[in-house]
Image (tube, rainbow, N blue to C red; front, side):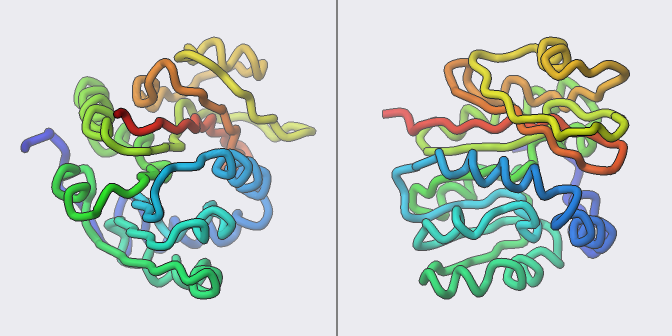
Length: 243
């Protein structure tokens, strides 16, 4: 199926990973990103899919993923185009996975190039999109194509327990004296309402992911201090398998 997506760019300097990204993550993981990682771990603790296998879509090295979540599964299938991701993921999480008896399988494939094929290759896993859907904004560039891809992926997941955390909005924001707190939301919140809740102004990039989760899904906004002067507002939600 042709989706209008550009060809994947796997490699050591790809657009969704590579050396520069991993060096940034290594520096920020234990300091600037620590509050976001804690918030993400708390949110993932509330997701209880009825599956013993997990498909991680675009996990990179799992810089923000907690061992406490990963080790709940008997088998993990990870899919990412970044050549460095498997080695670094195992360096970060391999010991905990081995202790828990969790088997890990990697595939360097672009999930979004053929989602039905990937999903059919694994027997009904729970599926977690690891901050990948918000990156379509940069890969496709055409807003209509991004919105169509988001809806296509959502439709394909109707028979699965799945979850996603992804950027809704991002923008330049000076450091604050206290971190922005997570916020539970219902329905499909408008970007302006989210910004108003946090008292944020200025110019913000819409990542065009607002339609990914069904309106009935409970969701959290997890503020992520991505850089000293850069704030990402990440939406996190999970969806139960349809009967």
